[in-house]
Length: 324
Ligand code: ADP
Ligand code: NA
Image (cartoon, rainbow, N blue to C red; front, side):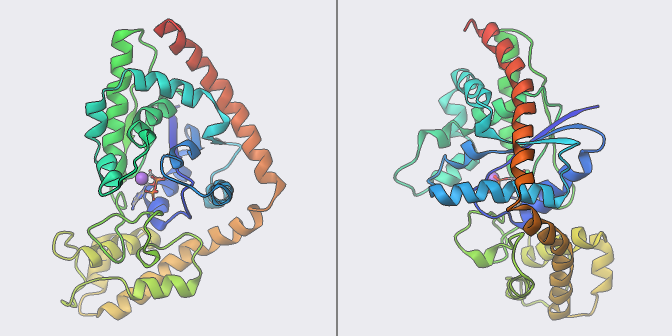
């Protein structure tokens, strides 16, 4: 049995990028593994958040995890800030990180580009992420493509700590899906879809209703060629829709390309919208039952307790190793 850890930021309503690239895979992993799924609220505050909105997003994310199929009997679902070992080990990880290597992270460069006021935690986000993962002796971290570089840093920090102090950390492997690892923006298909994109037309949110989904997909930026083929370089818009369509229906991209041979974008987009609606509808129904329930609070309490138990054990080892 392997230990799995992954986190999602409560920084807005999840997009189908988060779902198809990450959450959907979490659900498949939980039967055979020891899984920790975290609501990484401390990562979310590296950029300004509205207090009430953040509270709402934390709860909404918890409900979406469960509505997507995370089973609290099989997996540990918890809020990062309710397990204080994360920031404590995060500080220790910062102490063995170099400013230079943190400044080289592409996400840091992207998020600070053109900004005047940048929080220092935006720079030290990756050592906190390393702590999140290392606290649970994680073997595998299922994430989208954008987290590859952070995972590489986590592995380096774990190795550095093990060599310098004591061999206590498991070196985690990253697991990135073959299809869907990078769902692109519907409006700028060379950019990844993100829940914090200011252009709401660029993302399909997991709680969008049928009309919105249809409208967004129909107005997705494509090209004027009129041929449904997969070519990320020259046809990023159509390739992105093919990826979304393929995962939602369980068909391969090759099958879809054959099916839409000689057909226009109109029909292809309509069918893609229908496939997304069909995928999200049952999740949305369960979400609205869960989001206001007491059951949700109970699950998060139980999750925090289980996570605290495991994390504290590792924190004690790490402190001892460092001489704290
Ligand atoms: P976001 O960038 O949307 O705020 P997070 O940083 O909270 O998302 O990431 C949560 C998970 O979703 C991570 O595993 C991340 O790799 C994955 N993810 C985020 N955006 C995408 C995307 N566009 N396509 C595929 N996976 C994604
Ligand atoms: Na991200």
